[in-house]
Length: 195
Image (cartoon, rainbow, N blue to C red; front, side, top):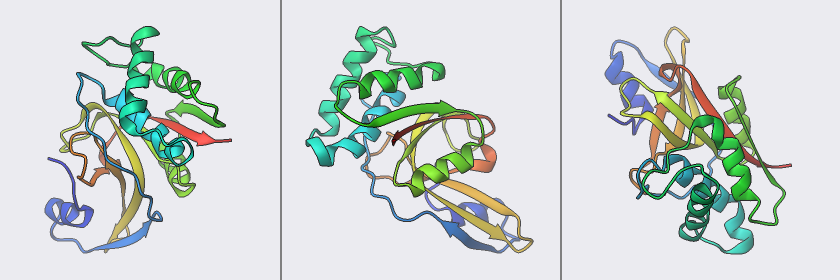
């Protein structure tokens, strides 16, 4: 079950509480994308974030960039045409290989430390971030990479905070979904940013 409205989700989980939107990121336009190949969530997410940054400069759309990223995945041994699965430890080198195709100042980095603060800083700087979710209870995501392009926090009447990422998950190009950060457990992020 995906989260399409954090407020309704919170009410459904604990209807005896009152919730208030506490803070949220500034609006960030990020196009959706659809995953058409087997286990290609990370490859598609990398291509989508690179497209977000570079399309205004070079005009290349997601389909072209995705084809180029898939070629790198196969030629450099990250995956193959039957299974594009990337190990999370390969996200940074793979995204760097994809970025090397373009004359860009964009860089890539990955980490597990302080992901909430790091992703919020990225989004506030108008840079979406990749999040590899091992498993989020109740979300339907398991070992899946999404692109976070917004965030929000709610507080309940006892001032307990609930954090959410606004994401594109590759399952539906138009759908706006959210991830309950408190239920993520361990997750891995990859940032693509200007230096």
